[in-house]
Image 1 (spheres, rainbow, N blue to C red):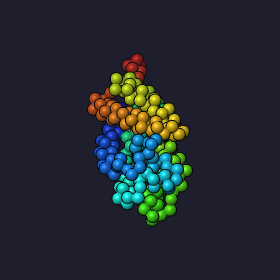
Image 2: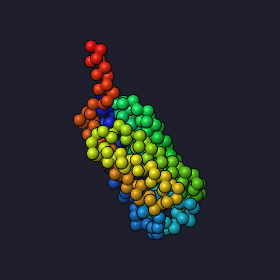
Image 3: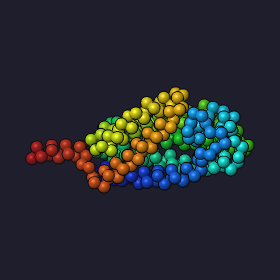
Image 4: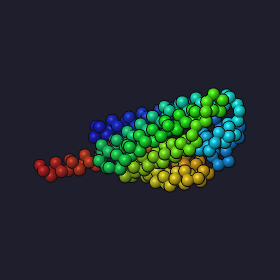
Length: 240
């Protein structure tokens, strides 16, 4: 049980960093772009799914200051990827230590894959900003979309893997589970080309992350007794 509580505390600490980094990154991923996308409500998402250099150039325009802001944002996003993957990874580790559910091992692996894909995506985005500034070649846009798709899909799966553990932990946990169960389907539809659903995808992710942050703080501070420990105690009592 001590191991599980420690892992949930690590997850909670990562959740605090997510909030702080989100505020900082929002200063650089500005919404007042030259030509907002008609399909993506969030400009950086439009960049992640851009199909050509001309599309990216149309979105950000020719303002070097705007492009440099996004370049800084991509660098910060490298750190953000490590933090959110740690958030999901430690939450799944805590659930695994509590109940030994194999789904949480899947969740741990998915969090690591999402982080790796996000890093690969950000290197492509950094190459894109260099190209827009005229100091480098354009990235492989097929790879950019592949890495972005992998990131979003594996984030949603990692979150889904926490549902069996959290379902019995109150109304907020059930709200998290509902959002996390809907999220993979919305994510998949978005990745298959229904880009107008991207706003709903980000909204569901944000709601679920906030709920999970509150839950891991609550679990680590109140120390919910894991079922595995309770079962072991009952078995010991019977033997006595």
